[in-house]
Image (cartoon, rainbow, N blue to C red; front, side):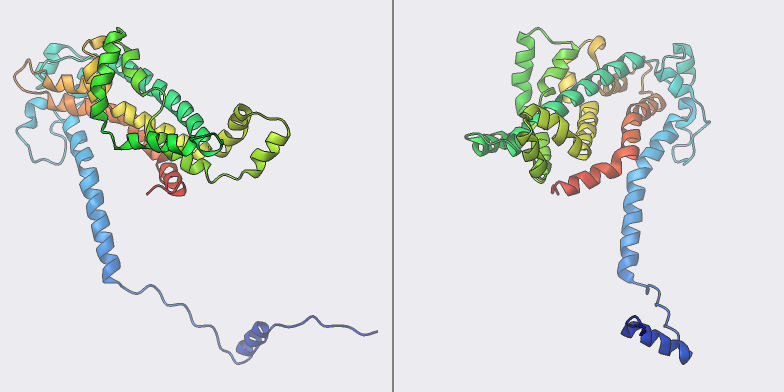
Length: 321
C-alpha cells in the first residue's frame, strides 16, 4: 500500500529554510516623513478651523449677556454666560427681562415659524422625491418616442437661474389667491426639479435589467416594478435626494419672502431675517439673533451628522462630481 504525500509549495520550502538558518523576515519600514503629507494636513486643519470657528463664535455670542457683550468683544468665551437669549427666542421671557440683558425687545413667534418650516420642508421633500423618482424611471427604464429629446429639453432647465422663474410663479400664485399661504410656498417646488431627475436617472441607468425583465415575464406592470423593485434597489440615492431636498427647502429664503408677508405663513429662516431687522431698542439683539440661528440650523446639523457620509457616497456612486 503506497502513500502519497501532498505537494509542497516553493514558498513553504523557502520558509522552512529561513527557520533552519535562523533568519527572520525583515520588519516593514514605517511611513517616512513627507513634507507633502505634512502640508496636506496643515491645509486640512486650516480649512476645518475656518469652517468651524464661525459656528463656535455664534454659540459664544448666543450664550453671552447682551448688556456686557460690548465690554469684551475679543473674548473667546461667553461673556457672563446666560440662557437669556434662548429664552427670548422661545418666548419664555418678558420684554423687560430682554432689555435688562441687552436685548432689543423685539419678538418673534418661533414656534409658529418652526411649524411652518416643518410642514413646508416635509411636504416638498415627499412630493419632489416621489415625482422625481417616477420621472427618472420613465427617462431611464421605459422606451417611448422622443424620450431623449424630451429629457434634453428638460435638462436644459438646469441652466435657467431660479430667479428667472420667481416672477411667473408669483403671478400664478397671485392669480390663484395663494399669497400669504403655505400652499403658495409649497406648490412651485412640490413636483420635481431638473437636478433631482438627473441625479436619480444616473443611478437608475446602472441598475441591472434582468430582475426587471423577469418581473415583466411574471406579468408585473410598470408601477409594480417601480415600487416593488426599483425603489428598494435605489434606497440610498432616494434617501440622499430626500435629505438634499429637505435642506434646500428649509434654507430657502427668497421665495417665502415673496409669498409670505403675514406672520401666519412665515418660515423660520424668514422669521430670522425679520427678527434681525427689528430694533425697537436701537440696536439688534445679537445674542438673540445668534441663538435663533443656532436653533434654526440644529435640524440641518443633525441630518448632516447622521446622513452626511451616505450623501457623499451616493453622489460619488451616481457619477456626479
